[in-house]
Image (tube, rainbow, N blue to C red; front, side):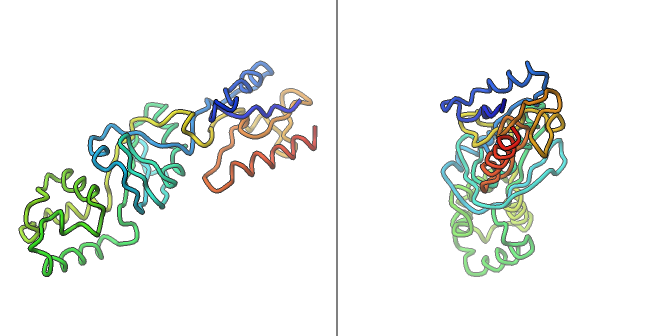
Length: 251
């Protein structure tokens, strides 16, 4: 028998987690299934003001104050939190941490291709030519207007103030916030929104060379039934095909 019932993502297709129940009845242990490659939710009020913006960014994930992983790409800011490929890539760790009750947040570098020192030089030089503009106008073009306003609100800086009146301390706060915009993670979207599922039958209970159960002879596993999940880029599809081929061949 090959158990290849899928995980719990895309429940409309029949992936309702029933396969895990079969596995448990047959003596296997199952790591809690959770959505992965999924959007992250935040209770930060500033998210609503940034909603609809897509821009290049580097996303650093922290769990209980410890750096865990990072990814760079197009970040999508939403009214409920953050999305986009780099968020998907780190989500499996964030989701498990949130589910465990840990303190989770991401730091978004809104200009990952520009070093802190280079950004500081650029902005202070621009003051000579554009100091007559409002602070909002001064920063636009560097960032989307919605992101500019979020950065300024976080630092309680009036966007309509003249840029030349910016104090050095205020400018440094703007730079720090652009390079490390902190967004607390309070939750995640459900299985319906996740591209894949993390969790499943423990890998140490399965023979990696045949995909046969170590607990019950002639029982095999494939795909998301198993506690294997990967990043975006076809890795999860490849796992489904490869594990299915191995399980089917040996069965």
